[in-house]
Amino acid sequence: MSLAAVLIVVFWAGLTLYSVLGGADFGAGVLHLLARDRPARRAIATAMGPVWEANHVWLVFFLAGLLTAFPRAFSALGASVLVPGALALVGIAVRGVALALRSSALFGIASVATPFGFGFTAACIARDQLAVGAFQLDVGLLAVAASAALAAAFMAVESAELAASFRRQATRGDRARDGARAARPAARGAAAARRTVGPRPPRGAHGRVRAGARARRAAPRAGSPRARRAPRSPWPR
Image (cartoon, rainbow, N blue to C red; front, side, top):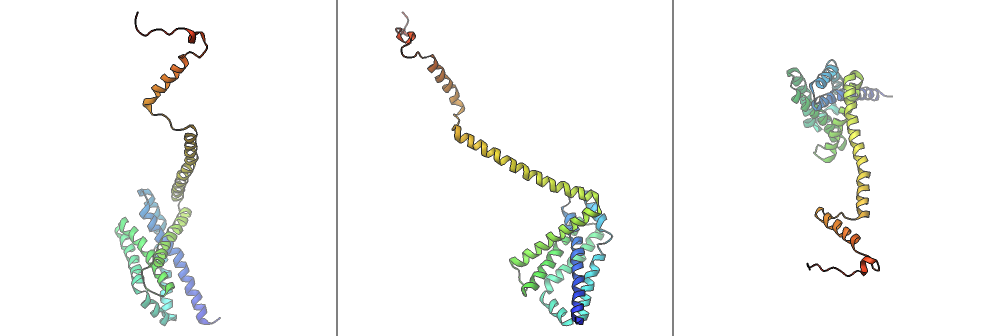
């Protein structure tokens, strides 16, 4: 194996580590933005606070190594994806400023924009063109979702409180889906019963239906003694 191949493997390993660890860092910001209460946000900040700066060392290692070992590749890469790459790096800086200023909204927005920018950059490199298209947008959104999933996995290991919160949210969605599935057969059975019995009469017609039934029961049958009697005149004598 040549020296260039060894260096490519080393740099690629550094980029992979940054994708996993840094992605979990960005995902923690996404979960921090979506958290509903302060205790959950405090638990997320406590779990990721000690390591969030250290994760960017792998990005510095990759870029510095690529610049040193393969300057032409670094130049071509920087020229092709200058705009989205620069925006992603700006997002990293904004995250640090927002965390120092304790601005939850700005920290969450920057945490969403940064992995989206990296995913968009990777899609542009894969397509060998800098353009805004469905593929680039999909890869950017996939990077945000993957970062949130990685962060949730790390948080569940680091904090029992966050693991219980994620479990409650997941089971809440499962209970809602189970309730909707259980209601469908009952609705189908009620519809089938209505089709079998027929439409119900309106409320105002119930009295007339009952009165007609009583009249039929009170009417004498043909050949009975009551039917052979002479009918009484309705007029007074």
